Structures are given as C-alpha cells and as structure tokens.
Image (cartoon, rainbow, N blue to C red; front, top):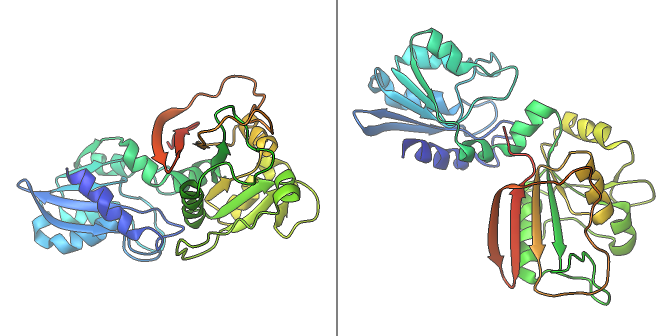
Length: 309
C-alpha cells in the first residue's frame, strides 16, 4: 500500500509542478510509514528530498517508495540519487522509470552504490504523468482524441447541434481545463465556430485554442504538416492536446500515429444520417486498458492507442 499512498501524495502537486511531473514519496521503517513528501512546485525540492528530510535519521536503513525513480539530473535542484545515498536508505521501490534522457537511470546509480532497488513498473504510476512522459520522450504533446457519436457512428445529426447529453458536455469542459491545448479541424470551425474554452468548471487556466488547417479563424491556426506542428507545440511547452475535431482531422491524426488515447462519448440514439466516424487506416487500431463509464444518458468508452511508457 505504500506505493499507492505515494501516488495519492503525488496528486497534491497537480497544477503547480508544470512543466515538471507530479511525484510522491513515502519512507517506511519496520513496517510503518515514518515520513511522506511530494513535489509541490517547479524549482522546489523533489518528493524524495521532502520525504527524506522529514524522516531525518529514521531514513537510515529504511525503504523509500517513490512513484518515479530518483533523478540523476543536476538542474534547479541536485540529483535525488545523492539525497537517497546521503540519507542511508537501504532499499528504493519505484513505481516507474524516468523517461527523461537527461535524468533517467537513477535506479542503476543506486544499485551500483549498493542500495537494494525494485521497479514495480506500475501502470498507474506511468499514467499519472502520461502527458509529461510523452512530451519528454517523443517531443510532442500527448494527444487525446475525443468524439461524441451515435450508436451508428455519426458525429453529426441533422437538425441538432448536440449529440451527447449535458453531463458529457460538462465532462469535456473538465477535460479542457486539464490540458494545455484544445484543437479542431477547419471543417469544424466553418460549421460550428467553437469557442473551445473551459466553462463553468472553475478552470484555473484556459487552454490554447488551435485549429489544424488553412483559412481564417479566431483560433490559433496551425497549417503545417502534423509532425512539424506537434514538435513546435512541444517546443512551446504544450504537453497535452485534446483533439475535438470532426472525422477528417481525427482520421489524419490516427493515420499518422499521433493519437495516444481515445475517448468516445456514445449517445443512446441511431441517427441514420450525418457524418460518420469511419477513418481509413492502413491497419486496425487496437485499444488497451479499455474502460466503460456511464455519463448521464451516454456511455464513455476510453482506451489507449499508445500506453504511456
């Protein structure tokens, strides 16, 4: 349960550590938790350092549980591996490896120094920082493709603007409040003129509002090849992108392999007409970690096209 507790602690840094990941740590000695810590803000001490400082001499010979392996990076703060070795910790249990080329390898450093190390490779630990992990390892944003559709796969229904119900639409506003950018295709701009803002959910900040394609728009127009635009967005600090466009832009992202997670809000109706989500791809796209959730009258199907590594 100690790693689960560390995951809970990590979430306390959500929204204040950007562009850094959220990380939690727990120090256990003789079967009891003696100290806890989490990364609170960019530039502040990392979770391991906070927990080890709180433990003091009780850290000597103890086990440190941390959601991601201690870093080896000399940055704003010293490497966490140095703090672990100085504290005299006997064992380190990590929920995930660090994908950052500049900071990874902490478990190897500790193992070479005589510390007992264990990697649990927890999906929960990797998913907790799925956007950041994609950003630092692939140099592009983590892309979530969100679509609302009917039981017969229609993403538009003649005579009505909305397919999904009010609960699903509120969930989308929550998603917008959590990501760095929201995007649609130019076809959606022409038909719906969407605002793409996070409304009535107490959003601490608004996402960047983008449109992929060419033409006039009040949104930020990204007209280059997808690979170039995604790399440019990553360079500008965009770690997560919610793609809300229609079937054309969705198919483009799927074909080029830039969708990481798929979220389908399925409404309980058969439209019989309207645009369909039927992308042409070279080979079937299989989802992992599929989940099903009732959202009002709708059903939300979520799954990973590419799991965070």
